[in-house]
Image (tube, rainbow, N blue to C red; front, side, top):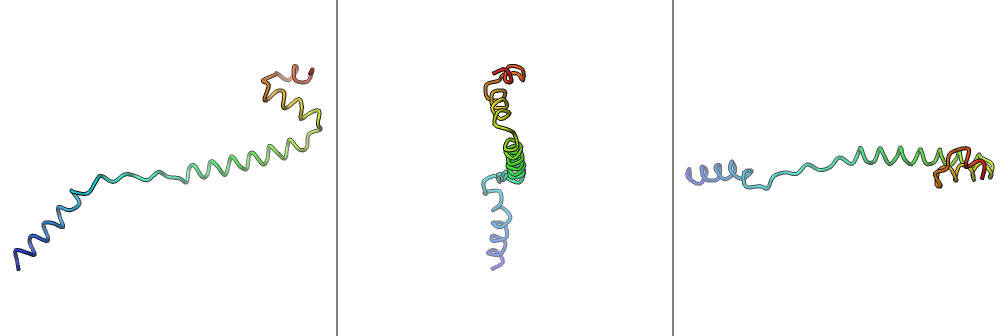
Length: 76
């Protein structure tokens, strides 16, 4: 009986060495916080664009999406 106890104790001590290495789980909190901040900025940008007159929105779109400078966007 004593031998069985020693053998069981040895197996319990050695068992962790037989497990595969533990992989750290990625921290999703940083990504989630970034997504929330991005969503807030997008809402704020959309609200600001909605306050512009149509002609101003068009100039903004030309400057941002067509890579025109302010003078070229306004001249168009």
